[in-house]
Every structure is written in C-alpha cells, then in structure tokens.
Image (cartoon, rainbow, N blue to C red; front, side, top):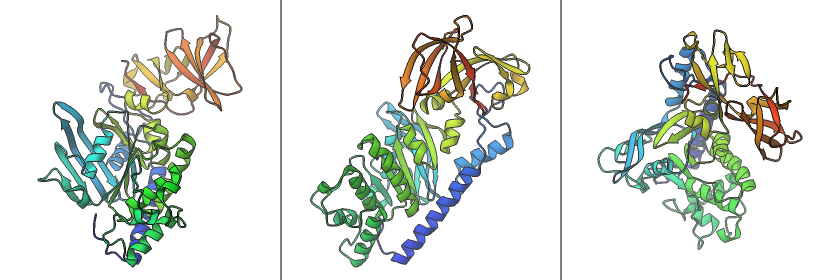
Length: 420
C-alpha cells in the first residue's frame, strides 16, 4: 500500500473528484443508446435491439474504453495451472470511479482474475496495469503490498484481538498518528459506525463486520478496491440491504472497484457495468440494462434471468411462431436478407402471457408452476415441444396440465439467434 502522506484536504478533494467522475459516467450510461451486436446475415452471431449500426459501434467502443481515465487494464490475460486453463485471453478496462462486476458461473475464471489483479496469483500471459503502471506481465510481478489495491474478502477477515478502529487503521503506515486517527474516524462515519470504534468485531453483526472490512480496505486509499463475493456470507434480507449500502459507500468515496459474484441480481443492481465471464473470457461487457436486454449470445441470455428461445420463421413482413404471427419489426435489427430464414427469439417470462383456452384452441399446456410470492411463473409446453415461461400475478392461478393460449405481449424489440 502507498505511504499515507496526503493531507485530509487533499483526500477530500480526491474523493470529490472521483465521485463527480462517477456521477458523470452514470449520467452517460443512462442516456447512452443500447449497443448493437447485430451481425450481417451470414455472421452467425446473436443480435440485440438496435437498428443503427453507426450509433451502436460508437456505444460499444465507449463501453470497451471508458471515457474516464483507465485505472485498471487487463490485456489478453491468461492463467494456466498445468494443462488446465482457468483464464483465457481476458480483456477488461475499468475507468476511474467505476464499479465493474465480473459475473459468471462457478469455475468460469472470475475469482482467479480477481486474485491476479490483487497479486495473489501471477498471470501466465498478458498484462495487468493499475493506475497506468504494469504490475504483472512485464518482468517480475509487483508484490501485492505494492500494487495499491485493496481487497475485501468473503469472510471479512477482521482481527478479533483488535478493536474496530484498530482493524480499520491496520493498513496505514503509521496507525498511531493523529492523521491516521482522523482517517479512521472519517471512514467509520462514512460506513455508519462512528460510535463503534472501541468495540470488538465479535460484538458486531454480520453487516457491521462487512462495513468494517470495507472501511479497512478503503483506509490506504487504494487505486482499485476488489470485492470477492462480498455478500455471500449474509442472509438474503441482509444481503439486499448491504449491497445497496456498499454501493452508497463506494459512490461517496469515489473509489474504483471490481466485484466478483455469481448472483445476477446483485450484479445488475449495484454495478456501473457488468462483465459476463464464460470459460475464462469476458463474453459481454456493458451497462446492466444493456447486457440483460441485449445479450450478445445464448450464454449471456440464459445466465441473466429466465430465458426461453421461441423458434420462428421469417417471411416477407412477418415472423411466424407457435404462438402466432407478428410484425418482423418486433425482432431487433432483422434486415431484409433474413427473409425465409429460421431464428430463435429470446423471450423472458414478462414477454409472454397465458390465458385459459379450450384444448382445440390452446397453444400448449402448463407443465410446471413456480410460486415466487408476488407472482407465478408458469412453464408451458407448446405443441412443437418448446417450453416457454409466462409471468403472472400471484392471484392468477392455472393448474398443471391446464390447456392455455400464449400471447407475445412484449412492447420492446427482442433479441434473436440462429437456430442451434
């Protein structure tokens, strides 16, 4: 960690500048058009929901290269363990004040990537740069303590024999100085624990211990803060509250952060951008809305929420499906060259609605129902064997085996993919 010689005024100015940068970036993200992953008809890739390739290309470039100064850059990073490759050619750039979440299933390489950024693992190939300085990939890697990177562990890793204030001060070069005391007091106020400095970590709740761990990692003012599944050890209700609290703290501190999780709801709710990782590579990176609404691959579509793929045939002006005929404009970026083609349309549960129907008029039958509290998700097997999901209010109950008609009610352009 770097030497703590900055004055309180300088720190406040730095945090203010970082926070202003984060606010500006968030505003750009809200106003930016969605990216367009649409290929030419023979490209064989997934498509999203923009029809203006020029605007889309501009947006993709902005997402891949944040407009703010890059604080963290991973370039073609590879990590091998013997004959096994855990990370394969991963690229990622994180701008100042950004919170980027690496999201993916277990074993996809996201935690290994975090450990390489922290210096706990060494990259087999590629480079990692923090604050413009290469810390891995050009000669001997920089030791973890010299990388200007903070790490919040899953288990919080607080020292039980130290007080809360002493835990927060642990990473400072002179923890007993008056400057350190002011820094600790400021951070405890920031995380809402201003009166807890003399307490033992054992006297705190799980959420309070997490905030202490966060304050300790922020104390040396790292260039990048890493969060390793930070909410996994909390119960569900506390997890929801704490992720919003942690987001608030990071925004107020203006810190650049990278988080790792397999929880899609967590990633979508707190991140400025989400990098979906699959088999050691970033498969798609963009704002939460972009990656959810315009997934560029079946994997991203399936991993982010409940996804069904509805087979469709493209005619002159229409798209024919097992649940009816619809205007071809419903499919995002579907050019004239696709007439006569078959595609699979991505539909989420809220894109479809089921209604009771006589068996002769039904599109399929209910084969499963999921009760989530506020709603039911009904799994309907269509006559062609495709199973789709329909979202309904909890007061609308269908029985398993009941025949239903299914209507596509989406009021937005839908992504589509070549048939498998």
